[in-house]
Image: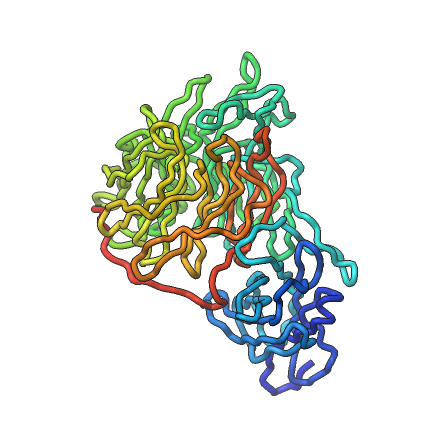
Amino acid sequence: MRTMGRRAERWVRAGWAALLATGLLAGCTEARVDEEQLSALVFTPEGAQIPAVSGLETVRLTAMDYSRREVLAQAEFPYGSGGGTLGGVTFAERLQLVVEGLDALGNPLLQGRSMPFRYLAGDRVDAPRIFLSTPDTFSEATALTGEGDALQPQEVRFQVASPRAGHAAVRLKNGLVLVVGGAQLTTEAAEGLALPGLPEGLEVDSAEDDGGVLDTAELYDPATGLFFPMPSMRFPRAFHTATLLDDGRVLVAGGVTVLDGDDGPELATLASAEIFDPSQPSAPWTLVAGSGEGLSDGRAWHTATLRRSDGSVVLIGGRQIDDGAVEVLGTAEIFNPQRDRFELNPGDEPIEMETPRAGHTAELVLSGRGAGKTILVLGGEGEGGPLRSTEVLTVVGDGARSAFSEGPAMRSARVGHASRTASGNGGRQIVVVGGRGADGALVEEIEAVDVTVGEFTSQGRLSELRDAPSLIELPQTQDMVVLGGLGEDGRPVRAAERLAFNPVDGSYTRVPVDGPMVRARHLHTATLMDNGLVLVTGGVSGASLTSQDDVEFFNADDGEPGFSYEASGGESGFSE
């Protein structure tokens, strides 16, 4: 309670005895008229408490403004002291609580963050859940369930029973994660359909009742740690794209599905797209119109890139499967969010690429002239195998047309790689890792292109070679994390590695990650959430390369709470 007319203050009281008994970070029993309590449910995979790990001496509590990366209040208490208070926070549009367990030198042995939430002094706020684990390690995805003294950690799996790989996951504007589609893949299918570009023997299990390709969707809520089923898509699809639009909706496009053919099940690519609206989560998915019935071409293994300049989404390349024939596509088409339809150039003129390609990546150029609307397409597989070439898609003329032109060559030909536009150095660099080379061997070298000069440079080498890895950028340090993929032995990789960003010269240095993944994964997804955890979902694993229904967390060590680095940009080396 608080006295009317006095400035309200927010207090976080740390009562370790109460915490260890009930999982309550704030266990205050003393009544004061000018304070309110803020409670947080702190838990690990082993229990609802801060564990007494070896070397733990201090607990640090931080209240920060998540949007501004600003520390609002911070305090440290000896682990054995029994408690303390943290005060002075009266308002935050997106308040985040950070709990760290430190050793004698101030190094974090445990860390966890709440999801951001709005707070005004006097508000009643449900106690946020904070998952604690060792920094830079993986752990089973765990939720805290139950009430009162019955709170217990529970392993989290997909809510919809079917396992999935080759699915898509996207973080929504409200912080939830949409997981959609995918396939039930295995090397031991009773009735299987082989997919192009995948390991030999890995097939869609078409003997399943759903044909082995899923139309299901579910939302992961980091605030509760649980998945919730959503309405199913209109079409089952795998190896599709899912893109968050500027208005918060999600565009799902293309993909491969299983049809009933004259001689039994057969694979086909979808020339359709549909939209999920999180503001109407129970509403059916909406089909998208286009130059034809939807997309101009059925396509899978393509890319979808959101242009910041106008919010449009550009689909590029991919493979088309029709009557068993596989074609690598050399076209692009653009989703217009103002008209909710796909379009080509004026007059329905095709947007033709320099080279047809699939299994490539496409990154938005964020620096210099054309920033926010220029796209760099990297590598992929053409008719002759993996490509070293890149090409640039720019807006030309009066801004109504898009055209491709030749870009700078990469140092290595590669397909099935991962890339990301780095936010460090003003977004001047695009980093490329992994994939298979011209001779089918996995590519070891990490490379990056500085878009202000248009030249690729070496950034060292991966310690673990991998095809189709995930690549995540951490928002504060701008470090990159490489995880999962398929290794040299043809089995999924458990190892992860970190590319540490140097803000002085924009280079990256490979450093090890403390712990391997809980499960080796290939054809999975990795999504960075607002609580600092990376949600790793599904994929194939094990000797049989079978789709999985479990998920795990990576607790990314992203620097001190509130730390941030900003760098200036430069002129783009790509012409419009």
